[in-house]
Length: 247
Image (cartoon, rainbow, N blue to C red; front, side, top):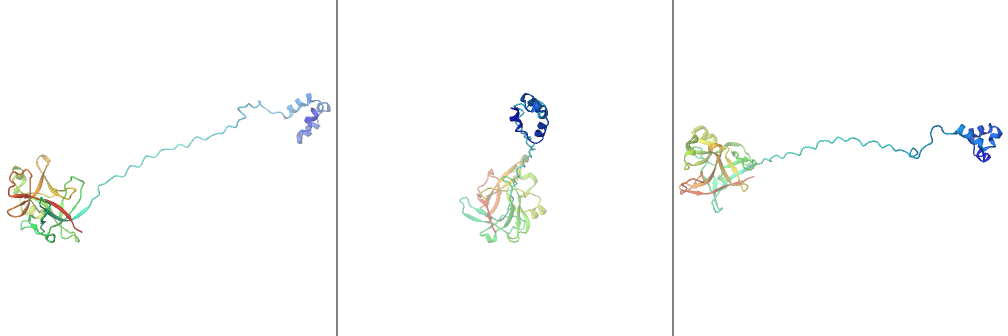
């Protein structure tokens, strides 16, 4: 056995073996402890667990969540509309247009039979339900604002219109009436439905509003704004005022 083992020695181990006494070279019982003393491992023998390679897995990177972006705000899209006020009978037939020429006082209560003589206006749309102002313009192409279209109570000053349901309101030039008459007047009173139909929301009692509807006075064929609750409408015919866009 000693001779068999020595045949596998090479290099430094072989030179070491050749330096041993012959009786050690030939006796396996003496050669074996000599080999272990010279080339044996230092430290305790390996265990099964320690022979298994350990793979060190780095911890996952710490991810700091970023705050979610705020959703975009939705703002109301504003639209400037230009056109005419078309007056329709209750059956939908055309009665005329609100005329361009007001009277000497500044009231717009007469009718034009066709669009050529109609009052030209513009307004900026607002969220549904909010009143707005109407501007009077020269032409759709020029769009220069000449005045505001307001609503006044003819011959009635301050809050007296609230005391009598028979008082009559009329569309008017804001600058003319406000500068020359002590009448009750407001301009941010216009509302338009999804179908393009106008009504007036006039500031009323206790901070509320009163809705006024358009009527034609039969004796004069003039346009007025009345309360629907007006007790005396025998001389007035209910009409509709709708917006007709122009380019």
